[in-house]
Image (cartoon, rainbow, N blue to C red):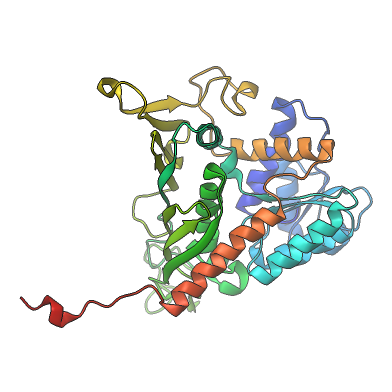
Length: 389
Ligand code: SOE
């Protein structure tokens, strides 16, 4: 595994736990953790259960005893690590978004196609597909329980950047992250919409905005300001979006509404969708991830209403490996489900899903939103004269 931040911890949990709850056809070995800082990598390896650690990813991807490389670095390293690993014959799991640009994503998808000829596989880590309630939503849509889809809205709202004194991080630097809320969490919203509906976005119209132009380079973000009193480490310019709002047209003609921001006061991790059609509707909120709300318009009108499905029955996706009904799962279970699905695909010689082609499709939507926002093509100004009464 290359990287030892938040996703390093989450992926390590998945690699440790999945073999203990699912009967996997292959036994993952947590051989090597690579980090930029050798000391911190060694601490993380010890803590998370990796046998070795190093600070040299180039050497790691060439080792004969390594069969798969799990990339959990910031986006600026995804392409070079994934392509080197694939060319060295290693399977790859790469965190989302696939890359920082469409050009990088295209090179990664090409490398994955070439590697697939010799049975080397690649997956991109959109783990919210593997929340049982989301997987159930896809099953219900695919089974036609909503009828003809007419409406779709997806929002991903967080608030960890609401404080303008929150310190600058790599996620606010375009060179490292590629984009801001759009790629970081908007990518999840885009992938989720395409996964649950089974349809693809074909055009978008959107706007990106940056709400806080610079942030302190150090300090606790709760009053220690680097410009003026307090810390003196200075500030850094935020070079990415804080909020993305866009419309998206799907290949079946459905028009979807999207929003992604990390400055939505009070929303901690609210990835929500509502989809409705001629015969029913579904709504989901990641902050209540064991539930899926379903409206069945084919019932007797006297008993119609949004029912709350508690998605913990053994018949529900992934659940039979865990607990009895009513004992909910958490955010971390998606990473065990991701390991399960990846290992089963590798053992059966199939392409894992989502693969780098799926990751490239999301990347193209991200870039289209950036282009649409830059061109301001969808705006119609209100003529003040028209307002005069
Ligand atoms: C930060 O916004 C973040 O950690 C994202 O980077 C993750 O992809 C998302 O799952 C949770 O929030």
